[in-house]
Image (cartoon, rainbow, N blue to C red; front, top):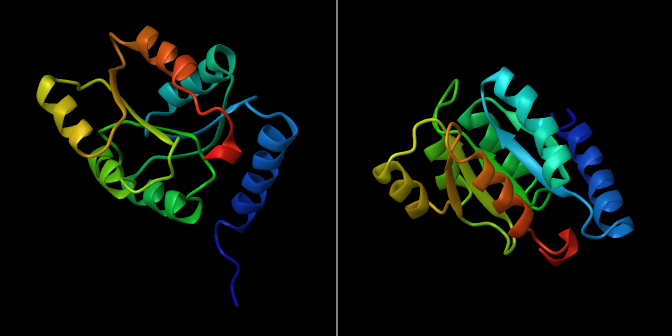
Length: 155
């Protein structure tokens, strides 16, 4: 039988979950990022680490990649950050795919294309918050710092 393509990731997530939550409760905000732009990822990941004590456990560039990871790791994250325009599929499909999630898990849209209609659509699909990359980064960081789960074990 062939091992799961996520077997290494599953092991790594279990280790991270133990270290960041049971050894250091409330320490890091366990985050998964759905973003296809490498430059944005390369800037966002260190910003999350520095400004919100976030720990990005992985990323996906496509809707199908994000949904596969989320299905394989339903309890391995506290914050999901989703861009709307991806290499394949859409962030809207990711939102629809993770409507059923554990209490305390937050889903945030971070996109350059936020209009009133898009915001309403994202919220209807279960987004907890919607931020524009070009205008709302301070509000996004504030949200990450104030609306945090108290600890992974409580999710």
